[in-house]
Length: 391
Length: 165
Image (cartoon, rainbow over all chains, first blue to last red; front, side, top):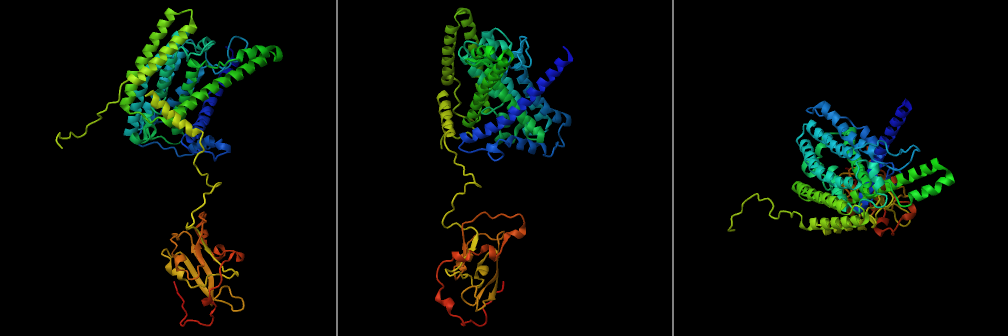
């Protein structure tokens, strides 16, 4: 590896990090506008045309706020935890193939790192993010922050299992841990069909993993003031905010990569082979790269819209409901998914279409049955005062 | 559970295609009600004379002491108002005014009326005092005839009904 390769790598990393933060800024705008429309409001539309400059205004405001460190806080841990939160969120992106731009030597310009254990890396990094939250809650030396942090760790640990099981089905289907090979395998059919159950489990578990509504108990304002970030202000708060949103978009991107065919889009390669004689190979590759990146972004945007939509619709779950859902519904569903995938892989190894249809039907049936026969909410509730029987 | 989830999602999605109810204020202003009490106006008669005769009853009625009236004798050759006197200075402090409308009730000539303008904000305290020039309507926007009692000049009550506040 010569020095020029290192420079290129560093530039690529910078571009990716900046792109992720820029994406975060405009995702907040997208969310606020869409959420407002879903709630019969208009949303921020004053700064620039259609509110286009709102994220910049917000960032400027946060930059210029006073930086306060609570007197009783554990100073260094307190200052470090925003970084602990935001770095895992940023480095999720490196293993995702954001598009397909062949560089002529068998590589892909739109994937920063191609590692053998890409999926394991993803799982590891997404769960690392909770350290930032837990440390922030502890270092603030505030009861509410602490409770928020503790809740976060409990929640993320519970849902990590379901998340892993959801992903495992895809890994079994594709026979690889490499993200680009998983995308490669989805040429004929996206994995949402054979792995429908896995997709549902993954989507719900990912929402809980990034502590997003309706699983945002970590920052339940009514109970915990602001949650783990109560004591954080100015840019430190912005970093927590950023890590949350980057993680959300990154999880959607992972879902797209694993279940919705990644950067694949019908007709992309036909167009590519048509273009090669017309404009030459490098230019055709560039067109393919940009179009596949666009397709990937489109799918991520669709899933992000779904997250916003769900946030606008579903009220926050209670803590016991959260644990019930994680351990009694999603975990068994994930195990069923793995069993079905394994059995179908053995029984119908050379008929992928039949196996996919069977997998889809079984998945849909399991989802419906689980929603009907899942653990019922306890009716009696909590009894604070025993009433005498006669009165 | 699944049915309820989709029902909820459908309900929120429906609102995405509806027009928001928000009134975007500086561009769109909702009309106020007929009896809305906003900024005062000093009215005129149809012939362009000021209705205010400088009696300062409004100032006496004002519970917030927001009104200052300093009357003066009308020049018989070029009267400002029918009757003997007119308001030489007429000022309302909009920071004190509570928009109760008692001045309106007290006025014998219906000279002061709380109208519909409600955008009253100032960059400094002094700007909150609205002078007679700001409150008076243009001469061509008067209404109503002068009542006969105001035409009876030289029936000056003695001593002069000066109300000092």
